[in-house]
Image 1 (cartoon, rainbow, N blue to C red):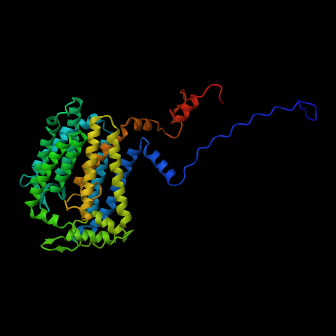
Image 2: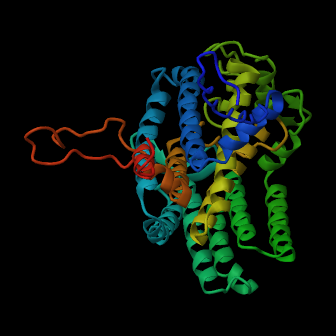
Image 3: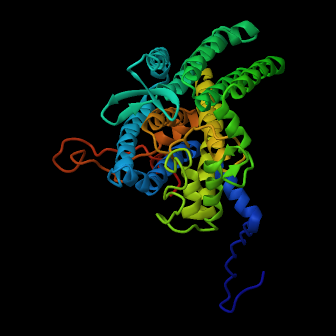
Length: 454
């Protein structure tokens, strides 16, 4: 054995540790895609998308309502902030409804289905009573509450159809009755046709289209066969054509598709064409908040049905794409909630709300872009109108409650604890009680270590 200079054997050397194998770092587009995919797969992604997306759309809508409605208010000899104050009041009340709906258990949502449906039907029938119903822009779908406040009961009919239809289909699925076409259609389709009839008596075809989209969404989620789905769609298409042919106003709106001049032959396409003018003059980043030209009496309904056009003029392509991205996020989150749940009622209700908001946004934006006829429906959470804002925010609260109720989301929310380790009076000298130990991941990891590990 070799010895050292002192005559002692050399100390044995510690064996070298094998080098840790490093995983290759993903850079560029692939790494960004991987991180984004991991973020989308987190349990609370849908919850954050619904809450954050709806909040941003509502706040941006308040800003645009204030900007787009000032000139209209001044032309009516009203204060410039008149419409904004009313919309802000509706948003505050809607926020309370959203919070209440997000904290309600699913059983309470199901219990509210029949009372909401009965109340909506009663109010929609009350609209046709002379002296109670109010006609706005040729449609008698309003009830005067008092002063300048009015409500549109047909907006609450959308929420009623979603809740009642979801509860009905869920109960039939529990009894395994949805395999028979008569149980799938009855009484869902007759009740929906009753609501459609009450709406069409007042002449509001735009809201009827949204209600039809909700009905189709519920039938599709219930697993309706293609022939049944095609049959209902064919009947609705024939009825729609008859209603369009018998109304000169609806025929004029249909003839304005693709119009580039305000006076396209015998049809006046002023609103549709000036909506395109507003979008075209916005450019990439817009003319600036409050600097719209079309809202100075050129564009009718600038703060309601055509607020998206004013947004494009003042905020440009960047602003309109941001709005589209927020609605796309809401739609994705709603589909995710409906697809991951095991509760039939949650699946139908989440799918119905997602269909409602997505279809209404597509119809409104498509009309502003000149791709669809002008249906007279507001942009959800964005356009002026308290009657449309209140039930929509309650529906958003439903989606938030359903997103929180997912098993993985409940576990993730349960892990959240205060960042400070003790509450006041929970421990300390002389308190007589042991300090509170927060149930955190760090505490459980420490307790799970072996006794010999440092």
